[in-house]
Length: 136
Image (cartoon, rainbow, N blue to C red; front, side, top):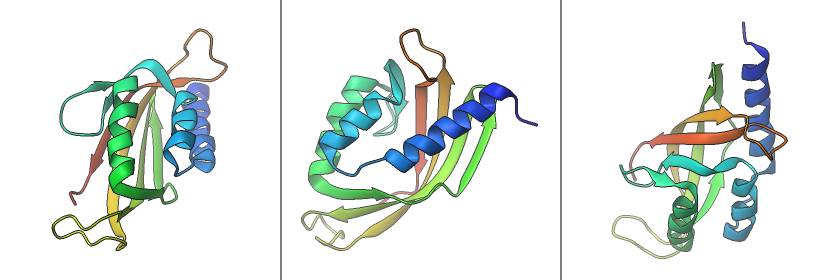
């Protein structure tokens, strides 16, 4: 049985998912409301990034691909961490090797989001994200 914090962070992530926007500038605003400023992000490459560095890295990703997120398919909370799985849809803006411009590919994604109550924020914030996906 989930405790109140586990329920709170699951609901927080579901609400954030419903508010997600595909454009980079909208995503910046969205992510500022979900991730703590000093959050550790492991999503692009193997090396951890600080949240603001991750945001900058995502600019390059968004320049190469149009991106959309599928619905959360699985969601499990334990202690301070929520694990979710979903599909991400990437459409290359130009042909890159085997990836054809305009042809959408589907990637399976699993995320582990660790939350904490951060002073100055009304809701729990993600302090660590680890994203795992199948390769392009």
